[in-house]
Image 1: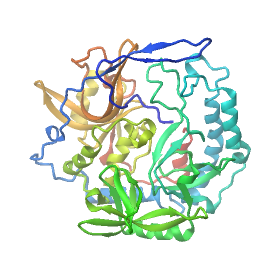
Image 2: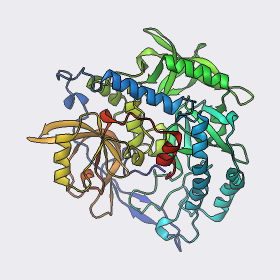
Image 3: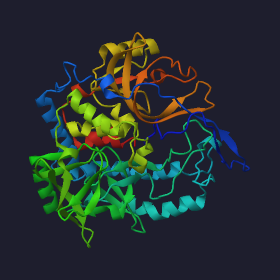
Image 4: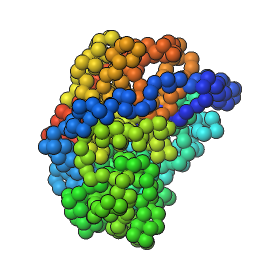
Length: 495
């Protein structure tokens, strides 16, 4: 599950919202005060990364390093050989199988309200407890007995043919912890895990009894349930053609919510930053790409898609401050989307989206991103030391800060109010209060200073004061490729 401490969309300043909630032993209403955190800091990227800076057009990564990273990206998404980490790799799918069989029943049991304390109980969108009828219906549809006996089948390789949502269980409706708990209630749907973009390789472990849902392995370090209508099965011929084109060139979407059409100008799906497709041809006006469509037999067919050339770039995009600003400006100020809800980003998907065009593969959730190699762990340091060391040892635009359940990008240092201040970029839900009796909502992606105290609201807890504080250097990632088994152990065993 993707639990973060961050995010959501904007609420008017200092408005108190009353949620009618809760059926513990008797029904009663409870008021949960939600305040808008006043964002008084500049959101102009040029104020932090000036175009006249001497390094503005400089590649922060060596061409060799970027090419090696792009090779790893390909390995995660498309490689089907023995060392491939893609869902199309038989070794990867087989390595994931035992973890999936173990974890799926555990995930289901996590939603069982029997013998749970009040704070651990699950609620539906109508604020009523999810009962055993709800759980039994999902359990029956999952068919755990069938899941327990699954074996690898080559014909179960697949691809997403639409943008879709990854769910912890095969159910559309949301599941919440009680809204009175800090960081719970809307929008924190416990069933929402991620967004899967069209054109993403998958492996289908199992299909629900009603055929509406498919349990899939993704390229990004997790498995989940998706709507069966949103995927199609791929043949060896499809994979070979897709791989050949991908090896010749990959196109990354760099303008969010851009339209992708076919050669007859018929709309196919929306392209989001983070989406990647094999390239066919590129002109100054339009770029031709491979896109998947589904035929009447549930098989994927390759079709030519068209995207505006200004909305996409050949991977890897040069990792200069100028190009990072280009991507950030497309994502900045968009509402927070818990687990990719509504196809908005949460904190970790924001990081993944930013660095995909540069050919850097990142796993999907914040805890996994915090496990990447080349880190400096400052968790034992106090807040003052953490901020000071970040300003000294952080690599601007190439350092992810992991604070446990949340990740942020270190942008660099700037003089604010005659004080050198560390600036971060993040997609964050909000700031917790020291008294834990209210919520201060930011609910968007934005530039933000990392301070010990915030003058506009001294009652909030600093993001630098969490139990974890780890710097992850994206310009010094381990270039050694995991085996499918070690990758499954690292990322899937603890899903």
